[in-house]
Length: 142
Figure 1 (tube, rainbow, N blue to C red):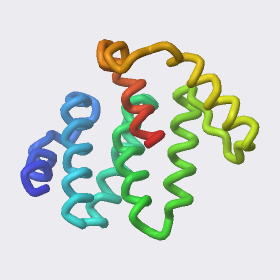
Figure 2: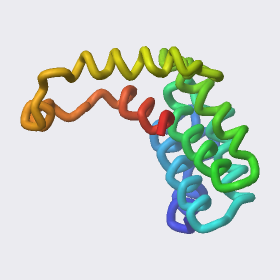
Figure 3: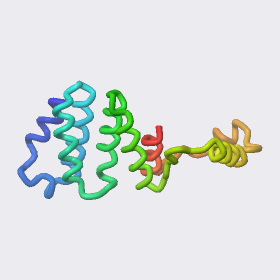
């Protein structure tokens, strides 16, 4: 945390304008380090700055994931789930809030139809997913 925080302190006053990507990365890494080290007040301050300064939705995804992760381990798990639902929805992946057994069974049947006839070797031969947005969406789903 101190390493990243020192990096932030070395940034010039207009760093969000002049060094946007460096600022974003330093603030995200400092937030993550603060969260891991249990420095909640620094985490809150740093993550709020990223949310207020990030120039687009995609640049807020990593920090939203950290915020969501931090809430999962507190009595605010419902808030974490809501953040995940909103983010996934904005990424085009709606999560039903109250899926019926019928809907779940239909989704399971659809998935089974997609993989029917595939061997384990066929599945291993699939290329790993590389789309960063889809990978991030999967993190939010998880």
